[in-house]
Length: 215
Image 1 (cartoon, rainbow, N blue to C red):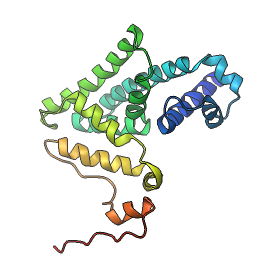
Image 2 (tube, helix red, strand yellow; image 1 turned 120 degrees about the vertical axis):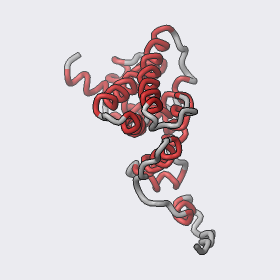
Image 3 (cartoon, rainbow, N blue to C red; image 1 turned 45 degrees about the vertical axis):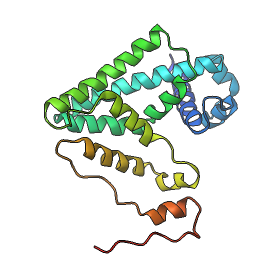
């Protein structure tokens, strides 16, 4: 595929991931076109219908998930830090939440099962290595880790989304969760978030902030 065609395909897939995560897989494809900055003909030439686009996006996300896990394993000597690197990379790509949304609207066949198994195997390798090194609780399963990432990587609703406009809050919350799974917890990134900030972001400025308990 020519480099310009690949760039167009990449823009469409990235835009589709964002739109489907924000508005669901039934969102108008016009919204994907606008977000990608391409013409409708460009989208339909590569993806003739919604199912083709969703399928390509799921395969792309799972493939990138596998790559992120393998890159983390190559980059970090400490197995726990490798797992942490992977979790944060997956959050940046918004993979976990998007895949769950999309798989609900896609027939899973042999090809998708194979791609999914490759991703799961790569993640399981990271998790087992961290456990064998005594850096991760032994009672954590791959399903626990995946669903935890899905829960934390979903966009915050309404005005709360402004709290994580730069994406740093999801990484703080991932660090908090990972610290709870670690056999020897590491430090947590970012700053503590006050409940009054949550109330303000939710558009409820009239509600009093909770009283602080004296230490």
